[in-house]
Image (cartoon, rainbow, N blue to C red; front, side, top):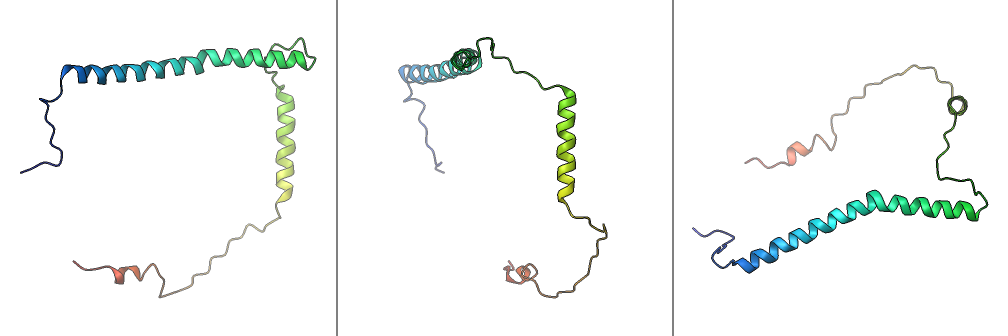
Length: 118
């Protein structure tokens, strides 16, 4: 019986294996360098650019830190948003009525009749 893929391992020599493993090594080393660049080098560049931009805009004391908003200010903003979003909704009676409608035919039930019996 013949297989779909016929591989002859006798044809593969040492130079072919060296090329394959060298290529794999180059790919993984380049992925490692890309990771290290995005993880450690790029944030340093971004901080330097932000510092230059802050000095250009006239904020010489800017050190690139993010200033946090105090908790009471966050609570006031959250309460204002909550009250605003609740005023948008209409007052509803909170009563749900479900009417049962009997339909004998639907496209979903007719799928059964279109299937082939094996």
